[in-house]
Structures are given as C-alpha cells and as structure tokens.
Image (cartoon, rainbow, N blue to C red; front, side, top):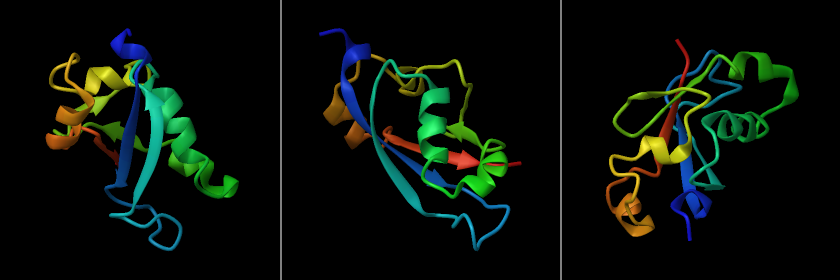
Length: 104
C-alpha cells in the first residue's frame, strides 16, 4: 500500500485562544485521516468541531507539527513527519501524530 493512502490517527491541540470561553487552550481533538490528505482538509474538519458562528476566527489558526514547524494548507499530513516512511507505531512513539493549532 502507498504510504499516502494509509489511515492514521492525528490529534490537534489548541495552543492559544482568542476567547477561552469558545476555544479552550490545551484541549485536544482527534481525527482519523489519510497520510496524503492536505493540511487544508484537516483544518476544515477541525473547524467543524466548533459552532459555525466562530468559523471565521478559527480559519485564522495555523497548524504546526509537533516540532512547531508551520504547515501550509497545501502540505499533506505526511509532510509533517520527520521521516515520511515512518511506521504508524513510530509516529505514535515519537509523538509526531500531535499537531498544534495556534493563532497569532
């Protein structure tokens, strides 16, 4: 199987918030995605976890990998890993499944 077609569990942790009552820093959201899915598609699914009334604020969040390197919308999830051929278990062992949502 092509690595980009492999399903993988991804977590996004909120790094900071424009309003602590609406978006709680430190809270983590879990998703099952394909390694070849774009960061833009991950971000859209993340935004769907919240009330539609704050979606414009959530679109201002940037997604970072576990090493706090920014990921662009056209990057794929596999780009976030230190080794794109890394196994699912190694990704978990290295905490590379954890992404951060940070707004500036």
